[in-house]
Length: 180
Image 1 (cartoon, rainbow, N blue to C red):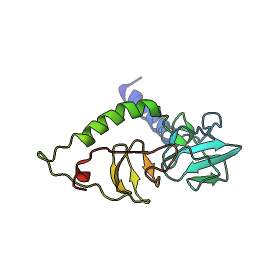
Image 2: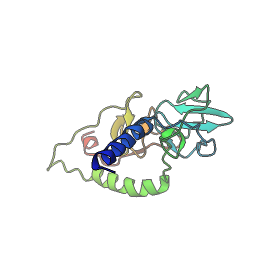
Image 3: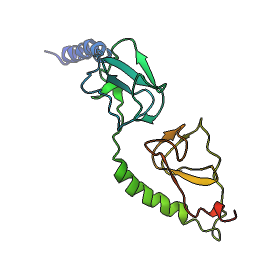
């Protein structure tokens, strides 16, 4: 066989192979066992779960709110496609957080950060007032009810000092409270 015929066959093989490689992977339905709702997980927006015979999609970041009983979940009319996204439901799953460990690990470091602010070294800034419409990350500070609060887990719409499970802890001796 001549060199040109070998090249032609190789090129023909690649040309025939390319359409097969560019086809999207066939979507497969989500597995209810892998997508079970778990009350102790955080569910970011777009997460898909299976609960009590129905599929739900999370509208926003939350934890512990049961699908079908809260606005944070949208009931889906059909089984969602999970193929080629990930091994878990919808390509997203709520990250399980050990709240005791996160409290001890992040709480201590955040507490030391919040309390170690030295007014002589940097100006003291009073945190913004708490807003229902705002999302807060771990370590965020806010002002509510005459106190300074620190988020101990991601939160959106959870009132400091009220929500269960707790999303906030009071900050003792914050520099902005010393003048009051």
